[in-house]
Image 1: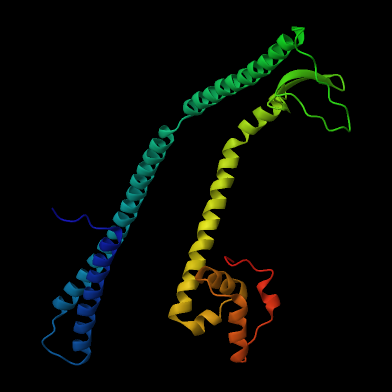
Image 2: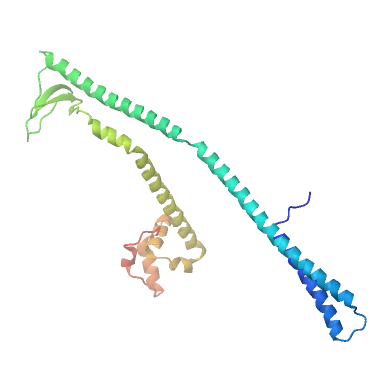
Length: 263
């Protein structure tokens, strides 16, 4: 199966035909000017006709090339539209709505869990408070007191439940809900931190390898990077600086401040 010619192929082929026709006509005309008796008027007329025809064909080729370019653009546009629509279909607004609804339900379950936990705290405290055999332990402001492993009391008018020697507080519903809302951003932040630390570790490893491979190039590194690499190699920085002094190439120790090794 032959390859479909491109617009450039069509234009180039037509231009070549015109070039050859021009050369043929020019050569015949030059022969006439050179007084060649073998050139006939018919040959000149035929060459001029061929050149005119080649010019017409070139115009036709340009029109065909322009139409082909338009068709190629239309095909590319159609393909791009189809591909883009297919991508959009992978994740729709319905998917977002479903995920949002699921997240909303999860937040409601979280809220109910917080409220149930706080309600359990209050009910447990009321049981202890209602029992005449359990005496309250009320802390006094400014005094250190040993609190019971389990019990109840009040502090500045607020009810307290003691558990394992400490106050068992009410869980702040708003704080927990806000922490849950911020969880995705926190995950992204933690991941970015890990990636930054990994990049820093790779740079230190490369610098440490350079210390063994090309000592002169290693000494051209900023002081902070050299120190991090030497720390990785277990080489004392002060010993390194004394070695640099011996080579009359001492750099101010202040250089090791202010620039992070991974910069």
